Image 1 (cartoon, helix red, strand yellow):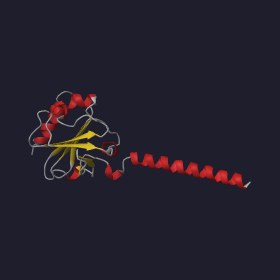
Image 2 (image 1 turned 45 degrees about the vertical axis):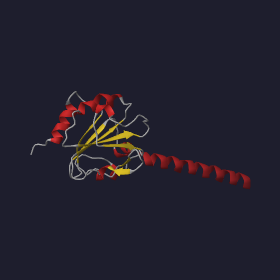
Image 3 (image 1 turned 60 degrees about the vertical axis):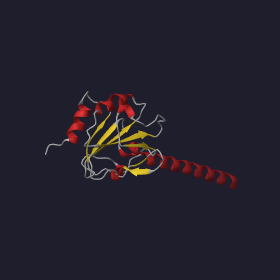
Image 4 (image 1 turned 180 degrees about the vertical axis):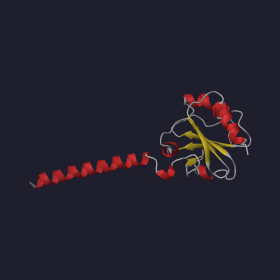
Length: 172
């Protein structure tokens, strides 16, 4: 009888451990309310890395400047179609490219575009910052750090560049 109780207790302990472990893994994949990117709100703290492994918080990069954060993957068919549409990139804006970590392609000059900052998403920031993430994701951040607009996925020819130009040259 003692052996039976000990075995039952051990089975319950193992099941409880597995349940807690599974819940822990799922919890880290679900975006926290304060980490979600929302139009009209300040860009939340999103930590990405450069080639040397130095961490950068996207919300603190290029303060006082209008910037465009572009999440992409070199192997993404939609990225290959959409990102060249952003050329020529307006000089009034700063482009910040964030490449998916699992991609091993070089980050130099993605899709023939110039960028001042090329970073890597090592911690699945894109997946944790959006309820339904997609590639490419383009965020328009104003000089005050507020997300003013965004694009996700494919769009009509010319519409991405038109939105970029409107952001670079806002009507007063």
